Length: 257
Image 1: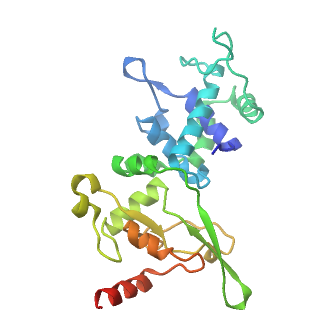
Image 2 (image 1 turned 90 degrees about the vertical axis):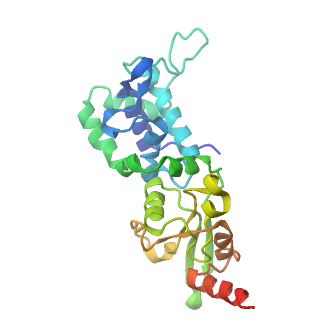
Image 3 (image 1 turned 30 degrees about the vertical axis):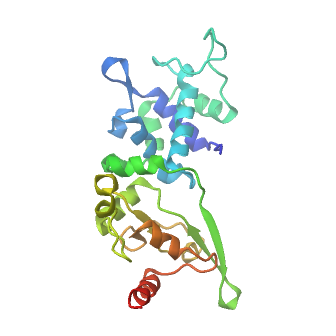
C-alpha cells in the first residue's frame, strides 16, 4: 500500500539526503545528529511522530525513497534517481518536495535540524536489534478500529493493534518482561534461541479515553505483554475487548475444569 508523504516527511528526507556523512569504504552514514550508524535505525527514529499507523518497514521504505529523491538535487556524492539511463539529470521533484527544497536550500544545517529534531525519537538509538528486527519483519496489516456502542448511546473506539513504535515496544518489554501476563507463556522456553526476546505488546487503553486529545502512551500502565494466543482471545469478538483480568478468569475456569 502506497503512503502519501506529508510535508514533514519530505523535510526529514531532505535532511537525511543533504547531511548524511561519509563512512568507511565510501559508504554513507546517517547525519551525525542522530548518533546512529544504521539507516534502518535512523528511519525508525521518525516513526513515532510520522508513521501514521503503518508497518515500520512500509514507513522506512517510504522515507528512504524520499531521501533518494533528493539525492540528485543536493550537493553530495550520492547520484540519486535519474530521469534517463544516461543519468544526465535528476528526477523531477514532486511539488511538496520541491517546496521543501526551495525553502531550505540556502538555510543552515543548524536551522534545519532544529525543525527536524521535533519529529525525531532519540530513544530509538538504544532499542535492541531484536526489537527492531521483529518490527521490520511485520507485514502491513493496518490498524483496525472497532466501534463499540455502550450504554447511553456513546461509542468507544478501540485500536485492535500491536504496538509498533520501537521506543514504546522496547520500554514495555523492559518493564514487563517477555512472559505473557495472562497465561505465563514464554516464547524462549517454547522455541529456544529462536523465541528469545519476543512477545506481543498489546494496548490496554481505549482511544475514547483520550477525549479527542493526544496523550502519550505510558508503557508501564497502557501496554501489556501477551502471547499470540492470549492476544487473539482478548480481541476474539469485534464488540468486546477483554481486560487481562477477564481473560485470566476464563483461563482459570478452563484450567480448573
